[in-house]
Picture 1: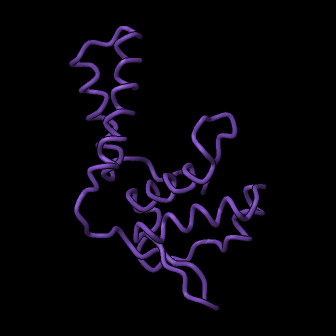
Picture 2: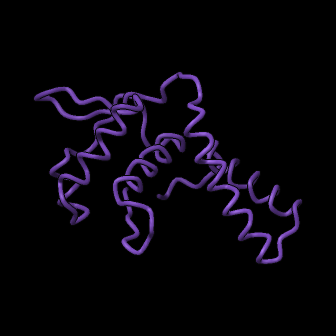
Picture 3: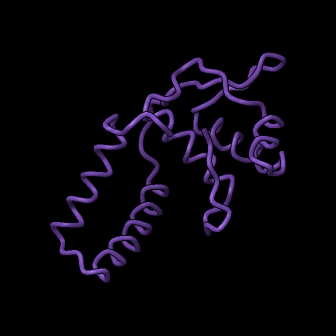
Length: 131
């Protein structure tokens, strides 16, 4: 279920976090579903357990997963919380970079907006379930 891009500038633990968020938003994972242990996922992905542990800590801090000692790690669901302005600013900066690249590639404002709408529709359950 988790696929890593070892050539990406994005750290491996962040890729894991983002993919679990995506799988949850798409409905591939639901509240109460079991996910692999740190050791199991590390073995499956051929990465160090410390990297997976860092991703799982981040997911726990965000309230997306919970670990029950002796039982395993489970999806806790999508937490209800107020947006973090620091995170929003980081996302806006990344979006600015991506939009700059699209404009450089010849996209007009309307095409960029249409592309963002297409991505949002995919995130809100309109995507195919073959990830």
